[in-house]
Length: 401
Image (cartoon, rainbow, N blue to C red):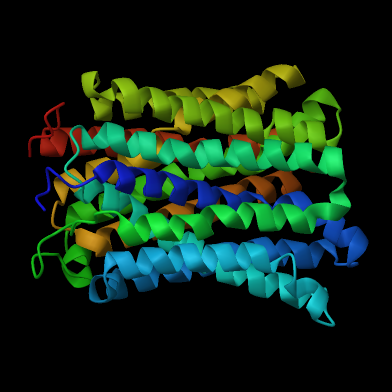
């Protein structure tokens, strides 16, 4: 069967569901923190450790993938991603109640599905990149939009389910969400998957480390991750303080508003990006992100700050997938190691950004707006980095080197 006759739409669908699965892994459990506090008497300090453990596990997986994926093969690894994601999510419905200390059961489940989430983050983008699609950068943006739609779906569907059937049935909701990755095992097992780089032609990690452009892309991904996740993590707090509403409504107005705007941005670029210069679009997005941070941090009217927070989702939409697209064009033989290290850098930025905002807010007498202002450096550095890359590698719409 030739590349032209293979059903790459099935590959595309599997990758879309892969990002939906990652959204479930990242965003379902935080909806249950208050429930775990009330039912299992788990302290907020321990619950915070759960979130930290999730991201640390992802970082470790990102790093390990750089060395093992090419040896084991993409198909085996991405199937393992769906298996661990599905088992970890489903395990939440069972394992906490089986152990004498429910907290340990939750941690085990989180680590299991964090492994799947980390593998997904590393593998899905290069799988799509290797497919013979036209306009790879727009396809990458469309692919990453499914994380946003998955995020919105998790919050909306879970909230509706809990409102109708009661929060005490959260175990059933966990089992329902686990169906998606378990079903997607079949998709990845049967869809065509092409090698990203011919065997023996991929750059090694050492070769990447010696390449100047690679470090610029690492900076780019750190800034993309920080710009996106820093505001996303604090969106709920903005909504609650701006509108003085319950946490449920706050989650819908804050994180959902941010995710919807981010998804729209990625969807629009995925549909019409072939007519737009990606580097120009990213620089414009970075400038818009800076304005949103300033509005959220300086607005005297809380609702205006909330609008700035939501619109920020639109501005950061292209940053992560766009950085991956630019990197893969400049370093076409970067292979799995490049994608894995880019994912690690993005996750590192996602850890740094929220921490800076939280710490600055605390030192400013719990002034969240002051903390947000401390994050303006990330979009500024991102714009400067993209400008340098554009000039250095003479990037236009045709991506000539």
